[in-house]
Image (cartoon, rainbow, N blue to C red):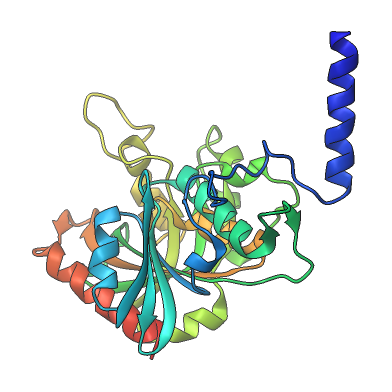
Length: 301
């Protein structure tokens, strides 16, 4: 009897899937109908969304808004939505790492492209504009701290996109990187993506445009060694030789998932450290303020 019930449930699930209806276990919602982790309803977000890592940075951004109409949070995901110069805009914290970006990107897409009440895909696709505003370290000795760097190409070393079907991306940067990457154990995890070029036009006056490496950790993946040794104490130098300009922990997932889901994304980082020269921003709080004002001025003129 137990086996029969199991088969019946599987068949029901398959039938629902074929009818374009998502099972409750696939799209988890809160009691009020909001998406599970972000705690948001479709009307809570704007088309233009600024993504920051640190929850404390959300209020630092939204204080520049003309008004804030939505303030919600759950876990590390804080969201403020309001208006800036008459246009609706959202700022949201993602926390650290591509595993969090996986949650953020899928749930943001669900808010605009899935009928949450009926758990069905919408027939018309909506495209969000996603602006990551973050900080990074540079592996290029020529990059000066406290300057803006826009990510054009990105390599992910975290392996996330290998869990998704149908993701493929290749360009000159990725081909060169894969050909010369010298770490066979890490190589299978690599994937690549690039910016939404039309959003790049907003930031064409940035001091630097470069190629970013997204790492799955802060210590050994970024060449830091405390009690544990990194795979190679020349890791950052070798990445720079392969064309990498800077590194952080989120952009590869934002860019790649945006490509799969049909959204547009760009990352602007303020360089607060140059690891090759051992330099750190003399006043990273002032540098952060400058970043926020610089990005907002260009997101909404």
